[in-house]
Length: 252
Ligand code: NAI
View 1 (tube, rainbow, N blue to C red):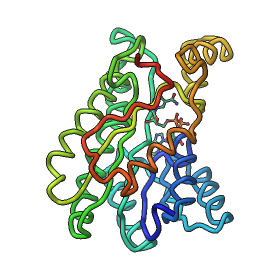
View 2 (cartoon, helix red, strand yellow):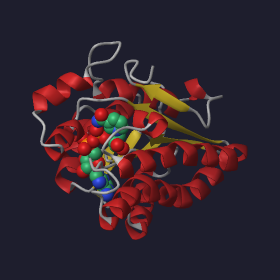
View 3 (tube, protein in one colour):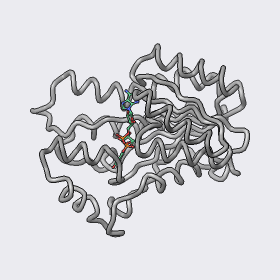
View 4 (cartoon, rainbow, N blue to C red):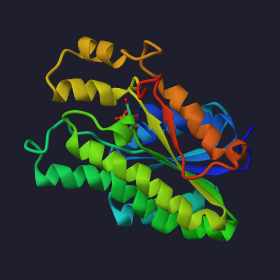
């Protein structure tokens, strides 16, 4: 049990990677606050963890909203008694070029993917500082490192996540707070199917293309979850500001 007595917040905790990570953190002994826009699905994940003998609470919230983030932090402190680990994972994608993207869509992608992390850190860092440290993991993307087609707002937002992670690591390292990004390639979740729909492509053909990488398959959410568990745990005690790539070799 690498996370015994630890308390974790997971945003987007009801989705593919967030759900797998909530379960993996709990399996290592952490109590988990499962935060998601989808209240029912978040409660389902929390119930799954409790049924397996773990501790979890579900919190419905929009991570782009400061009021919601403040409520998430307050509820987590009240219900779990502290916060040692935060996985800023909620994210959305719009498969459009700059010409096709509306200003509203651009702002929403940045609100959910970027402002959310700033807001969470703004409110959680003082708590971690007072506790003597913590581990924050932000979900970037392979496309935050190398770019990609027909996803201008997403690529820009994930690039921001990677660099914001480095800046946070510099600012808060002296207080014992480690901040890293995990950068998945194509992972088998609802997001990929949503992308196929947005691009009006056949889902199976889209998923087959996603598997075209050195390891010849997509990633599974549990494989990203294990990287997050490592970054959350003291096993990665000298790792901060890093961009860990989990993509089956897709960047190569
Ligand atoms: P998903 O669509 O399965 O799950 C995302 C979850 O975030 C959903 O439960 C959704 O309800 C929640 N969410 C969306 N907007 C929210 C908001 N405003 N407030 C709170 N919760 C919100 O997606 P997946 O694949 O699990 O993605 C998780 C993260 O991984 C995202 O940041 C995504 O960009 C990133 N990622 C995913 C890849 C993939 O291939 N699936 C590849 C690279 C990065």
